[in-house]
Amino acid sequence: MPPALHRFAVLALAVACAAPAAAQIPGNTVRVGVLTDMSGPFADQVGAGSVVAAKLAAEDFAAESHGLKVEIVSADHQNKPDIGAGIARHWVDQEGVDAIVDLPNSGVALAVATVLNEKHRVTLASSSLTSDLTGKACSPSTVQWVSDTWAQGASTVHAEMQRGLSNWYFITVDYALGHTLERDASDALTRAGGHVLGESRHPLGTTDFSSPLLAAQSSGAKVIALANTGSDAINAVKQAGEFGLAKDGISLAALFMQISDVHALGLPVAKGLQLIAAFYWDRNAETRAWSQRFAARMGGRMPTEDQAGVYSATLAYLRAVQAAGTIEGAPVVAAMRRAPIKDRLFGTVTIRSDGRAVHDMYLFQVKTPAESHGPWDVYKLLQTIPGNVAFRPLDPALCRFAGAR
Image 1 (cartoon, one colour):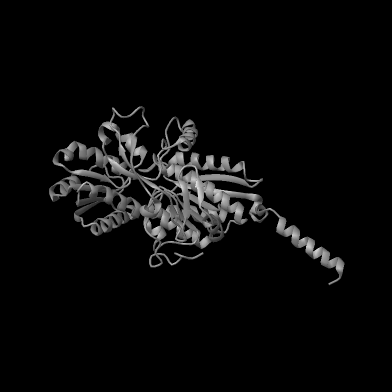
Image 2 (cartoon, helix red, strand yellow):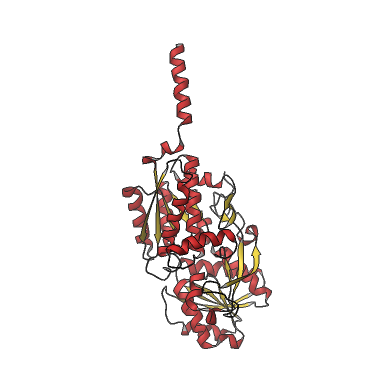
């Protein structure tokens, strides 16, 4: 090669290598879709608050984006997997959406993750609980951020067994979340030497729990495990109080209850409940500072763990896109996995090869009205559960990507 051409080739290569990562991102813009429940049983847990959380992440990323732009769009999946999958396809194909976050309702999350894996885009399942997302339905482009049914079930079983409560009855919402909550908690209970005395299934959005509660009461169980969440869990706890189950020595185990549910119940009804959570707004100075920003845009409402998860997962994703220089799903998730994430809301977070975000979890007890100093001062910390204990171990038999780099 003539010297002049050689010098030109070297210069071109140097310029290409020095080009900012954002140059490989279409339009120098990343679009994140918040696919959520705006009007159904999970609307208080996620909904408008999840959109606010994603926008806060985009605003915070702007200070370090080096010109990479971020757009946030949102939609209501109506808790229907076919609608959720349809929105996901339209977003990616017609609107250039690069990642979808939130995804309450495990059935919707599983459907959307399938679509996004086909499209080589990222699923940030921050509000989806089924452990199948890091098991048989895992993919190299999915990250499950906040919690899952294995962590919720195993940790709750451990807490109740420490109190000597080994005979359980399940009241289970009849879709993917409830099924995997019951399965994972039952497996943990059996391993710990406990017994399942029965179960009742109910549709999503049930208002009358008299029949399953009576069946649970007559079973002789000392724990009624609520394998549901949102308005279903709220209604079940209220009606259990009306039935006076506590006077019969029966404990309620809420397998997935969030601060919005406790707030709706009120402390006189919810007091004493023990629950597992990944985030509480008043845990430390950083969580308080961020939560006050969130509350200022939400009429004073403090964030749920799901809404906090939307913020943290979105911010981690945007940083990974910038580092990887692409919107392709697997490379972006690989960038998220590269090193532990120092997250202001969840502490140190490690993304495993099966897509599980591992961080500490917490056992809380709901305060009595006398212990509370305000409407959102509802939890007292009983125990910190290290992430390597809280979450299911990495298992190649469950996820074929487990252990992959």
